[in-house]
Each structure stands twice: as structure tokens, then as C-alpha cells.
Amino acid sequence: MNDTNKDMVTNITEAITAVDANETLMYEATTTVKLPSNGLMNPEVTQVTLKRMTIQQTKTLYTSKDPNFLTSLIKGCIVSPVNFSLNDLHPNDVIYLCFMLRYISSPKNLQQRVYCTECNNLYDTEIRIPELKVKYSEYKENLFKVKLEDLNDTVTFKILSEGEIQHCEQIARRRAKQKNLSDEDTTWEILLSKISYMIQSKNGEPFEDFEDKYKFISGLSAFDFESLNKEYTDVTESFGLDRKFISDCPKCGNSDEVEAYIAPDFFRLV
Ligand SMILES: [Zn+2]
Image (tube, rainbow, N blue to C red; front, side):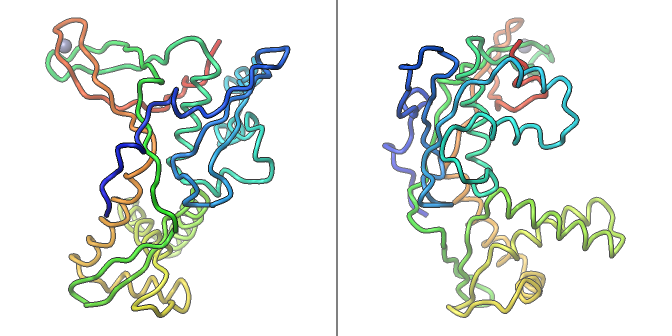
């Protein structure tokens, strides 16, 4: 894998490529952001234009029983492109859009509860979203090669979109239910299903269908399986929002590295 180019790492305020503040009402102003996948998932979608959240959308978060409320919220704040689904993006893009929407929609910094590993103190810390770094994908084509040493085969794989990952989970859960599997085995089934779905060809020959891929993956040595899994993870970790930051405990001064996450009140702005 290539080393990440330094030029591809930037902070969020630099990542905003355009702010259209020429509107009469500021809440109608739009912000255009470049997606971390940078066209890897869909060469035609490299940036998204967002508008700020309204008070009505904030209120919906308190009352909504829709399990997909987060997706609905983001979708509702996307001005362009018009005809695309969040499912076509990479999960790293979706997380990034959540943080960007949070950032442009509220003048308040994000608060997060942190646990001090030195004195066990629980405290609230402020996350300054613009200080988090973003890495952009440098890959031009969504097709990667990996040599499996034990089999002496070269396998190509693609990076899965949000929608494809959800689809794999559904297949795996259905399979697990039929086989009456435990929760732990279901998790394993989901992993097998995702890895099977992502592989495309072996030594240049395409697989017949999903079952053919599943059979191939299930029969791999632990070494080959891990090589494949590692290559996939290396690619997906090479782009996206780096949510890690350093937090200093107000009681003992100890610095802990923490990761910003999307808590239930993430978008509760008022
Ligand atoms: Zn402490």
C-alpha cells in the first residue's frame, strides 16, 4: 500500500471548498465539502453540498422512532448532488458528513464524556471539530490485488459501500437465523459474508456467484484470510476523518488519547 501523501491530509476548515453566504437568510447558506473517499466509490460524487440543520430537524431527533433517523437527517440537509443515496458512499464519508453537519449547524463546540485512565475521573471535554484531520483517498480505481501466500493465488477485491455492508449483514443474519447460530457465531458469519462479498476474482477469473465466493473464503488458511482482511483494512483506514484527539484531565492533568464518537445527543443542538 502507498504511504499517505502529506498533501492529502488537511483539517476540516481547509476541506470546505466553498461557502455560499450570498443568501439573504444565513440558515440557507450552503457549505460544500470534499468527501474522504474522493471518488473511490463513485467517480462522479467527490463532494457534497450541505445546508444547516433547522430547529424542526433538531426537534425530530427528540421524538423520532425511525431507526434510520441519522441517515434521514443527513439526507435532508444535502442540497446537492440530488439523485444519489448515502448507501452509495463509504461509511467513512457518512461519519465525516455527520461531523461536518454538526460543525456547520451549531456555534457550540461538541461535548464528550471522557474517562481518565490515571485517576478514574469522568469529565466532559470540548471537541473542536475544525482541529480534527481529514485524509482523502488517493486511489483512482476501486479494485485492489492481494497475493495469498498459502494458496499461491492472487485475489482482487473492492471496497464496500455503506449499502453493500448493510446488504451483507442482512444476508449473514438470515443465514445465522436459519442455522440457529449464537450471537458470537453471527458476528463471525457477518465477517465471512463481507469478505466474500468484497472479493471479485481469483487469478483474473471471476467467481461464479456469492456462494462460490463464500465457499472459497470459508476454506482459506488463517494466514491467507488475515492477509486479505489486513489489506482491506489498510485501504479503508487510509482515508476518512481522524477522530482521535488528546484530552487533559482537569483533576490530575493526565493526557489521554480519545476518539470522538456520535453520542445520542450529538445533533441535539437546542
Ligand atoms: Zn485524571
